[in-house]
Length: 97
Image (spheres, rainbow, N blue to C red):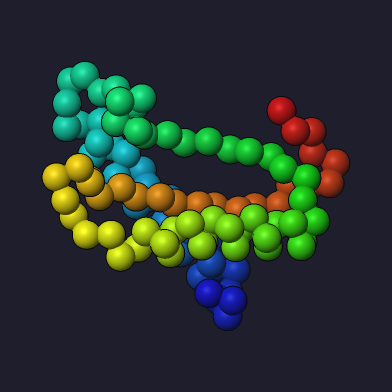
């Protein structure tokens, strides 16, 4: 991805977001009564002040945790879940809410 033009990167990101929207819409359409707590559905945004080193350490921890579970096989107590991330820098003068 590091060789993509701005336009190609924008198009790839849009496809990624559309995929997330599609997945979420499918989830919502499956039942009249959705329960995000019971279904373990969530979306969050955490603004964090991190050095490059702290950010890379955190991403390494996340990737290690994910890799540890990538080979899990389906079972009666497992469902397929989609875990997605997006990382973006804030403008230095942007207020964190």
